[in-house]
Length: 181
Image (cartoon, rainbow, N blue to C red; front, top):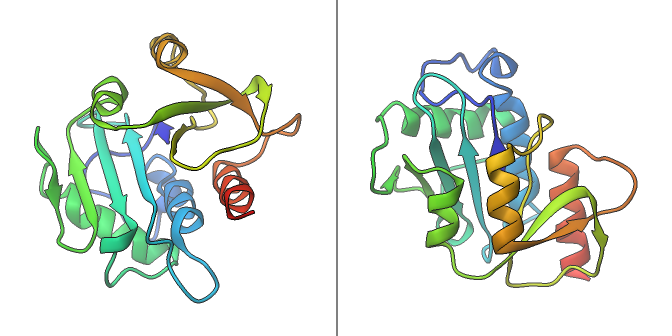
């Protein structure tokens, strides 16, 4: 996920997540990526490229098989993000030891690190069957930057989930539903 507004330091209130560059939306997306009724998706890795003030870009990585002491509620997820961002991530992956990592890297660098074919979601993309072992990329409500579109069109394939525009967290749920098949 690429978000243009998410705050890139830990100086935000857990009582005001929308005011931290829509940290509430990020937490909903993390919830949708991992939590099932009675379990976690251990085979999932979820990245969030954050470009908000004051220290962009920062990328968060959640590793399903390593997640510990994190519950599915927004406030709990945000507290883990807040704690890790407070360490001022640098050019190597830093971890909280509970399955969350942070690094000062933007989308182009991240895509260079990740192995796998890339599919990026776009309302003008082709509606296709989704496949496992792909890297799915989506933007926030502001959309992709021109630089992102250029990068993604060179490295990946543009796919749509249909004519209806969904919330980011809903897109993740739809992808998981289709992949769970």
